[in-house]
Length: 426
Ligand code: ATP
Ligand code: MG
Image 1 (tube, rainbow, N blue to C red):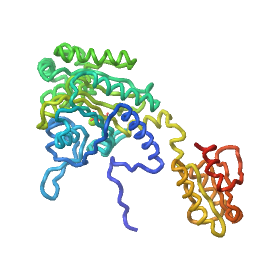
Image 2 (image 1 turned 90 degrees about the horizontal axis):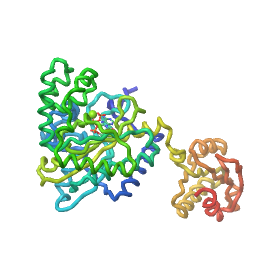
Image 3 (image 1 turned 45 degrees about the vertical axis):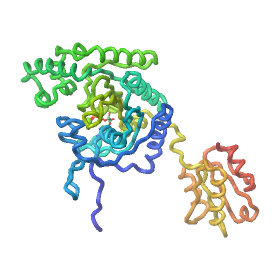
Image 4 (image 1 turned 90 degrees about the vertical axis):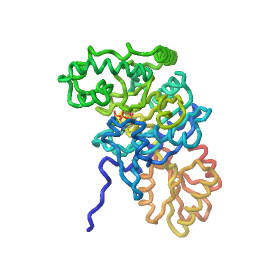
């Protein structure tokens, strides 16, 4: 036998048994987004490499070591998108969506990062991202956070996630803080872990989210970001907090939350959970007022976030908060045995779908005894089996068997079936 070819490490198949949960999550998110008046945008998964280098930043983990970059047949350098924000800005600019108007957008799809695969960390993973453009005031930052809080509520995750909140200040304020931090850390350079020593040169703020305990201990006496904030960032942060307080959304201010990408300023936030082990961040975002200009557009205020779909699904599964009906994807299973049964089954199922489009009807195909067909009916997850034998066909009747409850089996006229189903199923 020929050797089987396997999927690429860190790139997962979503199997038919898993996709109902994906659809449930995506459907719930779409409903919540619709409730806030956000519109969908779809971007390609491939972009010019320069787009990500210029937006995410040359000395970030993503650009330094995680991107899938290759030359195509024309010799152009292309990259499989590691995230959606840069593509979204590129698309909006390219189609004039940022000129004299505001945008509230969302997208979903696969992202690609060459990371070490482990639970909650993959090389192809899915994000649902939300981006807003043209609004400088912190009311929109607040709206985004309230929206995510509503989503956790809808999904039954609210008690299992906490909000970490910070403001990075203006670019100037951050630059002044960076200098102070570099002074402090340079004097103690030999006490830093290797990664942090490197970051001290390239991207010193990233030292703040070092996981190394000694580095963290060293940071205890380091200058604090909030002592360097500009007045506007300070008052915007107050305004954001006032909305969250009024809405009863709890948060923890974490001055060391800086996020791994270069383009953030002012508000940054992460929703984290302790239910998933090391990969605890399920949703992350912030303000990026400088990015549009950095990519060649006019200065445009912007704020957004992205959530990791796999991590949210792991949470739904771990916490067992997936509603039972999500996994039930078939309502009726139509079985038929004897002369003309196959044709009669197909016709009956189709007339039901025509009359009641919400019904999910699976028709047995492939013949076999009633017993073997009933096994399939049971396995399908259907609530009722419809049985057609020669007698039922001749008398325009159908036997209805309750597969899950106590109702047993009864014979009813096919002309009354639609009404019966409305009464018993919807
Ligand atoms: P992490 O700190 O876990 O590496 P990140 O800061 O790199 O996350 P972002 O770029 O902010 O992540 O992406 C937003 C969200 O996408 C994350 O909070 C996470 O839920 C999800 N995510 C990021 N990288 C991966 C991955 N390799 N596999 C699965 N989900 C991911
Ligand atoms: Mg990462």
